[in-house]
Structure formats: structure tokens, C-alpha cells
Length: 104
Image (cartoon, rainbow, N blue to C red):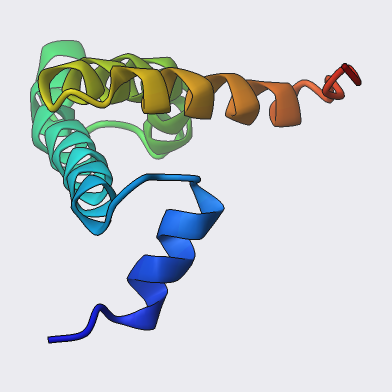
């Protein structure tokens, strides 16, 4: 059975050693997304007893951003891929804040 080309593309792009490692990384992203989705109703009900205002959705996405990143690192640690996700986070934040990679 051959490996789908998109998995090999991810392996090359993320500079991973095996297809299994790609699968684990995808599982970590999936678990993180489900966790964030799962905790939203609890956060909403904690802050608002009744219906929440419309602006809360925007505020939620701003506030969940750092929480998502911490959860991503936690799942990365649990699945043995902390080094990959730590490097991933550093690249991500360097892109957001416009820091260029220093030449060696």
C-alpha cells in the first residue's frame, strides 16, 4: 500500500522523519482542536449565565489563541512530539510578530 502524496508533502514540509510522525502530528492538531471546541461551552456558561452577547465570539477567539497554543504544546508532549511543536510555535510567533530568521 502506497502512502498518499499529501502525507509525503507534509513530511517534507515539516521535515519529519517518518509517515508515522506525520500521523502523530495530525492527531495532536486534532486533539487540540477538539479540546478547544469542547471547553468553549464551559467558558461561555462560566462568564454568562444566559445568552452571551455577539461581541463575545470575537473576544473568545482572541482569548483562546494563547490557550490553544498551550494545549498544543501539552498534547505534543503527551504524544512525544514536544520538540516539533516547540519549533512550530517559535516559527509561528516569529511570523506573526515579523521577526526574521537570523542568518548563521
